[in-house]
Length: 609
Ligand code: M6R
Image 1 (cartoon, rainbow, N blue to C red):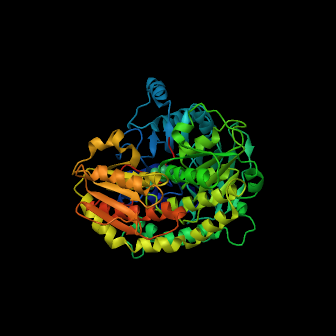
Image 2 (cartoon, rainbow, N blue to C red; image 1 turned 90 degrees about the vertical axis):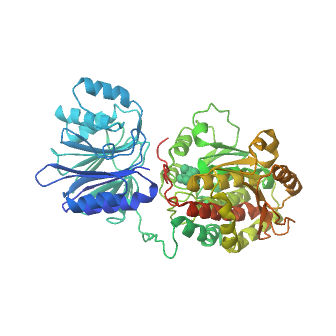
Image 3 (cartoon, rainbow, N blue to C red; image 1 turned 180 degrees about the horizontal axis):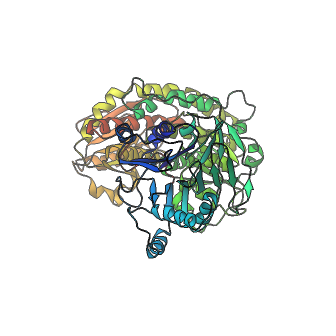
C-alpha cells in the first residue's frame, strides 16, 4: 500500500529517497513520485505510473537534486493509477505533499477550495490537502502552523509529509490512523511510513503517535501532540542487523517463503524453550491477564482471520474456552455485547492493518480484560498499542500472499491455546502431546514440501478453469478458505470455500465437469462424512483433488486425484495441509504467468480501511 519517505539533510538526498521507495516496494503500489527543493529554492518533481524503476529512469534522464525532499509510492484509492494522480501533489509550484490514507471529507473541501480559485489537476482525495496547506502558508503561517491548522480540517486517516520552497530546509509531517516514523540522523533527519525504508541511513527511530505533527530540518526535530503542545516521544534504537531479503535460488519470494516454513515454525515455537511458563512468550503481565480469561474474542482480516478461525477450534475443543472470531472491518462498526473475562486477540502479520488497528482502538472501556496481538512485526502499531504481544518468527515476508506468516501465526495461537488451556480443560498429557507435535512440525512440513512435483502435476488441471471449489470440514474448513484465498489472490481464478456439509444447500448447483473441487480431507473423525460429500460432487462430473492422509484410504481413480499427505498428529494437520495448498496456488499462478509476488490490485500492508 502507499509508502512515504522524506529527508531533511545537508547532503543530496534523491538517492536516499529512491532507495527508501525500493525498500517499500514489496508492500504493493501502482505509481511513484518524488519532489525536492533544489539549491535555487525551486520545486523539482518526477511522477511515474508503474514501478520505482520507472522513476529511476526518469531521474537518470533528468536528475532532480536537493537536500530536502519527499517521495511516495501510491496504491490507488481515489482516481486511477496514473502519473497525474501519483504523489507528490503540488500547489502553486510552492508546496509539495505526499499522503497515505483516505481523506473522507475531500469533496466538501474540494468545493470550498474551488470556490476560492484553487485549480485541481488530479482525481485524488489528497490534492485538497496540499491546497489547504498552501492557503494557510499564503496567509502568513509558518510551515508547522500551516500543517497544524490543515489537519484540523481533515476527516479520515492520514500520514502526511510536505515541503515548502519558502522553508527550504524543513519537512513537516502529521499522522492520524496511518503510521509514520522519524529516522533520527546526525545533522540530518528523515521520515517514513515504515522504518525499513530508513534503515539505510539510521538505526534510531521515533514512532509518532496518533495526532502528532512533526517538524524536521537537518538540525531540529520537534514533535507536537494533537493539542499542539510540544512533546518528547521515545527514541528507539533498532540495532539488530538489517534483515537482507534476497531471492537466492528461488524464482519468487512466495516460493522462497513457502520453503522457509520449517525454519520459521521451529523458530516461533523455540520461543517457548527454556521458559518456566509458556505465558512468558506473550510478554510481561501475561500470567496476570491469562489467569482471568474466561473467553476469547479474535479479530483479524484476510489470511490472519483464517488463522483466527482455526484457533477457535483449538481454543474450544482443546482448552474448553469459548471463542468468537470476526473480521475486523465488521467488528469495529458493530454494536457489541461484551462477555465478562474476555481477552481481545488481534492477529496481523504486518501489525498495521487499518481495520484491525481500529478494532483494537475502539474496544469499549471495560469490554475486554486485556489485549493480545499476534504479529510478525516488532514495533508495528498493533504491537505498540497492545498490552500483550506474541511475535511470530517468520522473518520478513515479501510476497503479498501470506504463507509463512500464516503458519507461524497458527503456531503462536496453538501456544496460546496451551497457555490458556492449562488453566481450563487441558490436561498435562494433552499439553505434552501438543508440545511433541509442535516439535515434530518442521519435519512434517519438510515432507510436504517434498511433494512439490506431485502438486505441480495437479496444478495443470486448474489452468483453463475460471472457478474452483474448496471443501473442508471442522478445523479444515478455514484451511479450505485459506487455500481458496491463495488461489484467487495469485492466479485470479475465482475460488470459494465451503464447509463440505453445506454443499447440498446451494453450491452443488455449480458443480459440473468444468468445476475442479479441492477437498481438504485429512482423515480425522469427520472422514466418513467428507467421503459422502465427495461422492455427491463426483457423481455430478466434477474433477476432484483430494488432499488426504496417506492412511485415510483414498485412492486416485479417473477424475479423482489424491495427494497422499504425511501421516501426522491431528493437531498440526491444519498447518501441514496449508503448505500443500500454498504450493498448489503457486504452481497454478506460475503457469498462468501472473505476478506471483505482487498480484494485481493488492497490497502487502493494508493501511487504509
Ligand atoms: O497484515 P495482516 O495480517 O493484518 O493482513 C491481513 C490481510 O490483508 C492479509 O492476510 C491478506 O489477506 C493476505 N494478502 C492474504 O494472503
